[in-house]
Image (cartoon, rainbow, N blue to C red; front, side, top):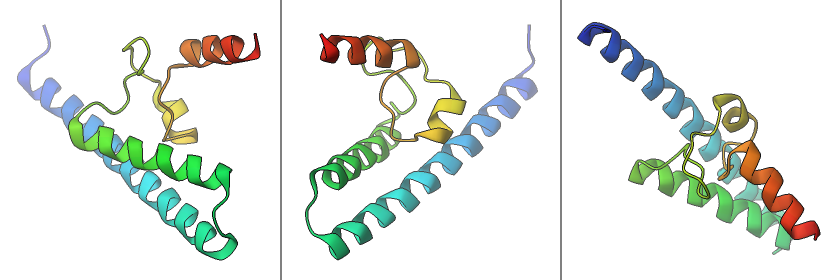
Length: 101
């Protein structure tokens, strides 16, 4: 069984990743807001900003990184590419298929 020290190290590692993702979300939120100010209300930008703000709220509530459809963890590689992602890759594919049908 892992020691308390190992658990603390894992926890600190995950906290550091979460802070990196929060900073990335904050940067993207700022960029989206700036773009909105320059170009006016565009549906794509408004949707992106809403997704980013939703992700920041999930961080604050302790729910960030869990798929909103099935509850499994979203891989860190996915989150660093799209930190506002709300679904795991499997559920994202299912949702895309459902929308296409």
